[in-house]
Image 1 (spheres, helix red, strand yellow):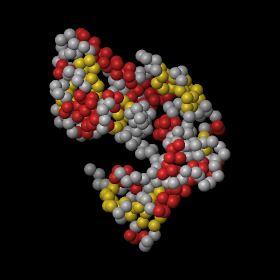
Image 2 (image 1 turned 120 degrees about the vertical axis):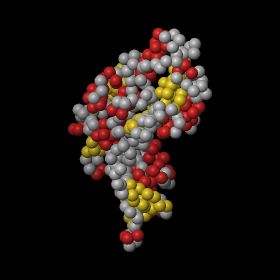
Image 3 (image 1 turned 45 degrees about the vertical axis):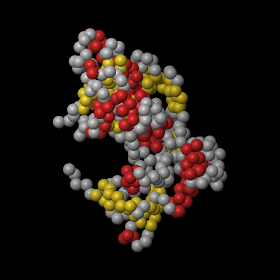
Image 4 (image 1 turned 180 degrees about the vertical axis):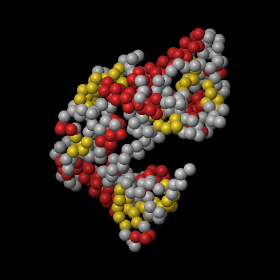
Length: 134
Length: 270
């Protein structure tokens, strides 16, 4: 069975290690703007982590004019083929959850790809096991 | 499993495996062998317009014959021997860039690329008409990929240009500005204001984000995208920042409803 990235909000301390781990893994540098995962604090230990849901019927895949977005059947994640992406930004507008982002330097779409089947960096580095890949 | 034929070829003296139907450029890109390109984009059909990706090919069976081909179009062959950089190729690319610099002396992209091949001042007569367009046709191909087919190349020889039909604002243009974004030299200009986008002589009214009022895309593009993708037009009426805020608000209200129930999964409404 495919593994799933599970989020347990009650364990999240909003330390933002996942955001750092994600941006280092994907872009080789720290920066919350390029992280594919976000944490939010609502106060009083109410924290939430948001990342791509890898929707079954994904709006981003439907709108992409050049088929740059496709599902990796082994991980179940929707991945961006960066060479194919023309940076039109349609996927980030169409995503009803706001989980698509664009690289500020070249406009190429960035999204969670579950780290291609390895344990996702966010889950590997999460100190409180709020993120697990199982 | 489909039985795809594997082809082995030689690039710069090293052996590589490739699938049938790949081009020399596909293999070189995969292996990280640098070949300069201007009109190539992986998502679009290659046409070999800019000629910069020229490589030299030969084959043991060709009795010493060798020639220059555009690597973006030439399909791999068993036993093919490819050279991506030598004196002949260098001179060819230099001539191409010299000519491009004569056409577009003000383009910083061409200036930079030409300088890499030692051309800082063109040896030809400079173009009288001020343009940054190198006629690579990427804009035409991306417009076709979007499904709009609004612009095309017109004329031949020195009169060739990327044109609108009958030099009027193209009726099929949806104002997506993909042509302007993909242009390697930034030759296509457009102007965005919070109300309208001006491109190709059109003035498109912009749809604004329902929450924050930031302009998202032209109204005509929204209709086009909704019809093409089969999605509800509402999908395109919220910007990504506000969509994310909406997700957060949904979760926040779920938190507020069950003050302590933090361990339970939060269902996010679509």
